[in-house]
Length: 148
Image (cartoon, rainbow, N blue to C red; front, top):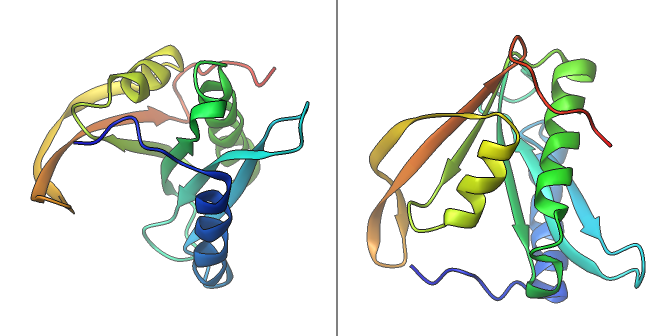
């Protein structure tokens, strides 16, 4: 499956540029994850909106460069995004879809209290064709970690 991905600062910048249209259309909220010591972009975190402009349900996504991994940045960014969605947007359900081989992402979501709901078989198309995804969810009514 190719995990972990080699996510460079340039790749992050390219992703942010590609997301601008989706953000203007109300389909996505996206932020950069920046190393406060160096100022380098080390990843991104976003909340996809399946129904543009409707905040009832969002899909959490995050990706980090090698320099950003194993530092708690995905956990912190995801906690902040989920809390912001619940408290500021009135989101009722935040979902996350994870490739079954990406164990680190599963651990991030489990730390945050997301429930593992099951496997969506052949759900997304990857480089080798249809791929499974594990679906996790966190509800506004669930306890969720404080944004530290």
